[in-house]
Figure 1 (cartoon, one colour):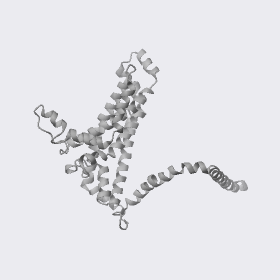
Figure 2 (figure 1 turned 135 degrees about the vertical axis):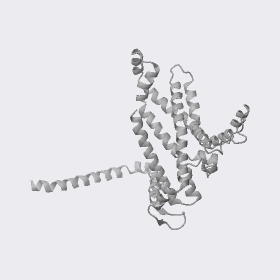
Figure 3 (figure 1 turned 60 degrees about the vertical axis):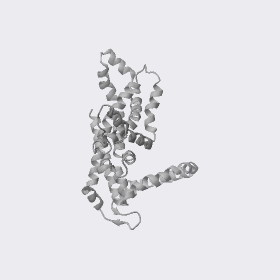
Figure 4 (figure 1 turned 90 degrees about the horizontal axis):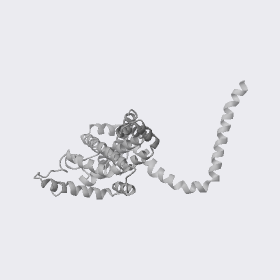
Length: 312
């Protein structure tokens, strides 16, 4: 028994060495194939993994991008929690996320249900038209929305002036500017989410609808008792992706309002704030700390959404 017990670890080590040898043998055998796919992994390591790891390192340092790097521990995170502009950007980000996410996903579901009607003609044309908004250049979108919501010469102010209403300062008002940014997000991503919902609707077995119809279920009962439960993974995916996208909102406020986020930083989002600190203020350590705070927020909200949707 003693000899058997002593030989067991040796056997495990021998097996591990054998597996490792076999693995390297396979790699050498297929080295040409690995050589062809290596550019992807090299680029992924250089521009994906390395920046992530380096941002962790930077979040504990003080660095202006040129001078010496100085270790400051958790000082960047402590400063972030006492910085009023950070909380302003955080509040703006949450407000725009709430204003845009709820109507966007609701409209997307309505459009998907309409596109899923069997008798609908030219369905492919409608799908393309709804998806065009997602591939349109965001710079062009921002310019169009700027012409619509311009404080003095905007199309919307011209339209309401026809009814005797005074022009509204859409861009200068701290509340209305969030609705302007939210409307840009809704316009851009409603069609994208509608296409995802449409794919989910078409995966629901028709036999279940026919069985519900035979049992006398109304269309509303069928939708909430059959469609929504089956679509739950798809809905969860769109909610999480919408949350991630809204938390990372950058281009829309930057083009529409500038780097400072407009008057009183009313349109300053966390991503725009992080950009300002890194590339305008040269506070790379602090910007890295903000980026990890943003990561934790996105992870926390994704977890909350996952728990909430699973309870539906």
